[in-house]
Length: 311
Figure 1: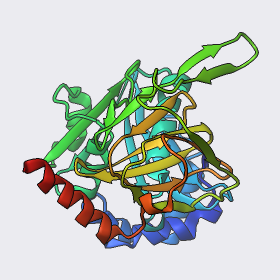
Figure 2 (figure 1 turned 180 degrees about the vertical axis):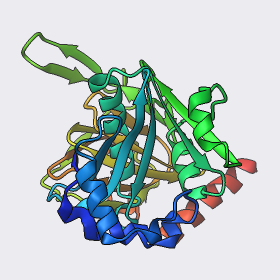
Figure 3 (figure 1 turned 180 degrees about the horizontal axis):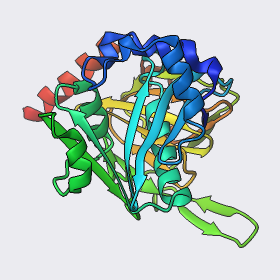
């Protein structure tokens, strides 16, 4: 995945989402009325308007997946806007676009704050921002609010310079750990953890998954007893976890971040970047009988566990 300037070749796929009412119905603008000429002019003008920054979110093979923007860049603030095609949803493109545009806002444009709003009827967008721990704000500058004075039922979000985004201690009840890391000037970093010390179990097996194409999904299983630590020493992988605590996801892209799974948890892994590596440290040797590969069986298993706890 990467960000780049919008290009004329993106027009057909931009028009795809503009004509998809399931995406645009909650937006202020009527995108359906835009012609090819309108879209062409937008792409061409985006390269010359210094008060805005419009970027294409694209795959590793340069396929357009969506647009992310900073609008009204002035006085140390800007508004954020993002939209992705239906085919890009649930594949990590929206979150990648958010991270990259916020980094551009604070590093390249040296902004102090970024604001954006969501129509409260746009449930998909609200779930996305809430999942990534963005919170509603009320201290929005008047010059920003004025642009939306004709609209009601908006939920406002913001990020300020220096804010840490998407920092979590747990995902679906599984602990997120910070793996000890020792940096060496001009020579990289060394990260390590030790069984029964940083990890709450003895490690009996280590394995890793590599050479996986972007967009590939793996996993689709749970373990009855096995405990594991998952971490990504290279690349970007989205981890979806589900257990009795609910279903949540987290992106692993920092070699010093890991997830400890100590209870029966269904897991799915989506490769957001080709050749990313997923490493697993496990509490036991391979046992085929410990696997649950059928989702309905998994749901029955954790349901029966809960009933056992009540007795």
